[in-house]
Each structure stands twice: as C-alpha cells, then as structure tokens.
Length: 62
Image 1 (cartoon, rainbow, N blue to C red):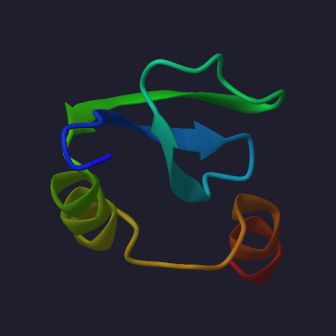
Image 2 (cartoon, rainbow, N blue to C red):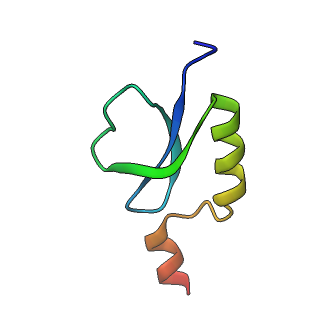
C-alpha cells in the first residue's frame, strides 16, 4: 500500500477526497488533476479546499 498512487477527486458540490488511482472513479466524482502518494494528495486537498461548505451552501449564503 505504501507505493499506491492516489488521485485527488472532486464532486459536483466541490468537495474533495482522494481515491486509489488504479480503481474506477465512484459515481458523481471526477479527477481534480492531482496524482501522488496518499500524503501528497492529502496535502494538496488541504491547500485547495479552503472552504469546506458544499458549493450549494456557499451560493445560498453569497
């Protein structure tokens, strides 16, 4: 598992997660354009996902 590559994935609500690169993406999620180790992907998610509210909630409160 240490050499497993991961993808950063994002759903329609602009929520992020990571997914094993060798598996099919789950329904409703797309590749967010970053691949790396588990730790690298989690660090990337920390950088880019600065507002944890779902997109629909952000739009309602804007």
